[in-house]
Image 1 (cartoon, helix red, strand yellow):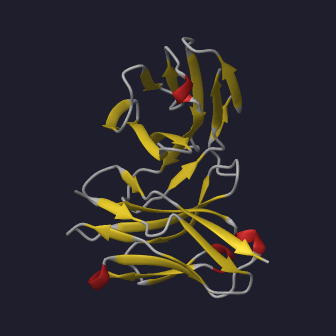
Image 2 (cartoon, each protein chain N blue to C red; image 1 turned 135 degrees about the vertical axis):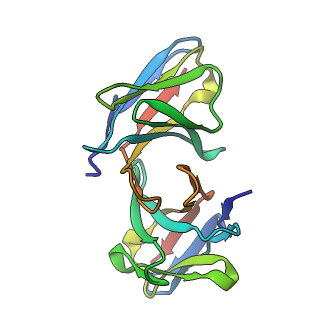
Length: 113
Length: 114
């Protein structure tokens, strides 16, 4: 089955510390990968996406993610957390074989002042 | 602003009732996806339409139905409502043509069933 797994439903970091949110996919077909952010009471908005053009993808708000085929991973990082980064983060995949998106269960990021 | 609109923003109703949620996709997007988000179930894919036709079904209850109209707006109908149907309902649209095209989400409709 094609799916995406986010390890850690809750992550806490101190302000200024590294943010690392994990995402792994499971499929033999190379996927397209996405990270979305959801602030309280809002819809999801795209942070960045991997479309096979480059393995290191830079997104908005200083976030980036690296596609590692050997590890089937697409972890999201940010060098220095800001209070405004506190939100829910979703990893998602799509495949060149269908229309559907598959979302992970989400990771809630807390930033401690 | 994603360009996807949803109405109403909030909806409060009673058990057993029926409601209709509306979604207008971004201009030119042919695909519409519906999701339910609750605290205990997380983000659940319900159903997808493409240019008026149903394309994929997720965890959608038989009490729920949806359709996409010729002008591409979509409606999600929820009937015989139960307390457990209280949730945020999101609509997302997606451009056709490339499988790496992202979904754009609307602001959601918060449904409260009392």
